[in-house]
Image (cartoon, rainbow, N blue to C red; front, side, top):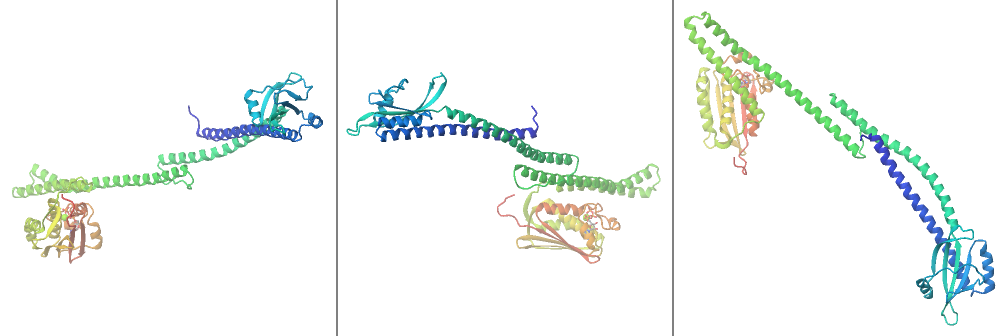
Amino acid sequence: MRLPYFYQQVLGFLSVILVLLLITGLSLLRFSRTSALNDTEETLFAYGEALVEGNLKLEQLNYAQDLLDNQGIDLAIFDNEGERVYPLESTQPAPYLSEESKEQLRRGQRLSLTIQEQDLHGNERETALVYLPFFSQETSAYAGYVAVSAPVSWIDEEMQDLQSNLLYAFLFSSLGALVISLVFASYQVNRVNQLRKAAHQVTSGNFDIRLDHKERDEVDDLIEDFNTMVAALKDYNQEVARQEERRKDFMADAAHEMRTPLTTINGLLEGLEYDVIPEEQKHRSIKLMQKETRRLIRLVNENLDYENIRSNRIVLNKQEFQVKEVVESVTEQLRESAEESHNRLQVDVEEDVMVYADYDRFTQILVNLVRNAVQFTENGLIQVHAHVEEGNTVVTVSDNGIGMTEEQKTNMWERYYKADLSRTNKKYGESGLGMAIVQQLVRLHGASIHVDSKPNEGTSFTLTFPHQPLDTEE
Ligand SMILES: Nc1ncnc2c1ncn2[C@@H]1O[C@H](COP(=O)(O)OP(=O)(O)OP(=O)(O)O)[C@@H](O)[C@H]1O
Ligand SMILES: [Mg+2]
């Protein structure tokens, strides 16, 4: 069954208030009746005591009875056998007393009870009765008891008055309770509705919405959580948008990068097909196509590699090894091309310099750095140096080539960034992926890379690899 929140709240508040009112009213009625009855009994006891203290003289008794008559109070005295001794002429039967009650009186205890009886007109009426024992002055022996009775029907009449007063009070309070419940309920429901509205806005793409709240109750906590959730959603949405932007850029860049070699290959193939390339140029054309194909393959591989490294999909197999060994093999690979640009390659690494890294990835980093140095230097000197500093392994690759401006230095890490198109017509590089890959690999190793460069003076890259942690064995 669907019961709107508003009514749930009203019902909740109202039922609590009504139950409270009902319990209070009933307790009040009960309490009033008991205390009225107690008061009557107390009065009756007081009369009885006065009689006993007055030694139960007959003329006194008559006088007292006359006085009490108009209050409906009856006096009676019984001897120790339970026989009525006053008033002797009474037509009323002596009230029945159980043996146990008589025994209690003999022991000096007072008794009080209420009984239902019929009056002269046959109407049911309730009477309060108290019994007080009295004792012989000479022997102190039990001599009998005084019975004082009074009708208590008036209490019920008063109770009826009280009841009707209470009923009015109950009705008025219920009305008040209803108004208060409506106010409270609409306040609570408004807060929930505010949240609902905000949630709808978020669904339709408004992530800037924030709800005001204090710190009063759980609903305020909920509003705060809602605000946090919307902020998180906004961040997430922006991240998704950024990723989408990157994906588009990547597609555009990759297409752009591939177009140049593909156009070259296509042109050469057409030339061969229509036999417009002279025989002596054919070999060179095929070599050129091979070079462009290799460039394409490298482009695809490096892109895949970059994506894998960037999204942490590769596992590093870290170990400790000699830096000198790697540096020598890298410079050996690149020596020929260095000589072609009339560059000198100089290695300055002590045998005992070790590094804690993934062997292949460390080699890849060095190949990229040294190849760039060779690529952007002519008739110069390329130096590779390594040493240990505060436990860390520091490797520097420096050249005295064309260098970079501040702007080039900051942009160099971006994928496909090439400072100057004229620089790309070299034997190596050309895809602009090298430094982006180096940066990701360095990050993955927990290492750092620093670049110093001045246009026309040269460039120097400094790698710092942290020393092997003592407590891990990889
Ligand atoms: N030692 C250097 N001296 C001068 N410029 C450099 C040096 N190293 C990098 N650069 C600049 O940073 C750019 C980015 O280098 P990166 O290695 O990422 O690309 P690339 O060498 O052009 O292509 P590849 O992906 O083949 O390495 C280079 O194009 C170049 O302009
Ligand atoms: Mg490069």
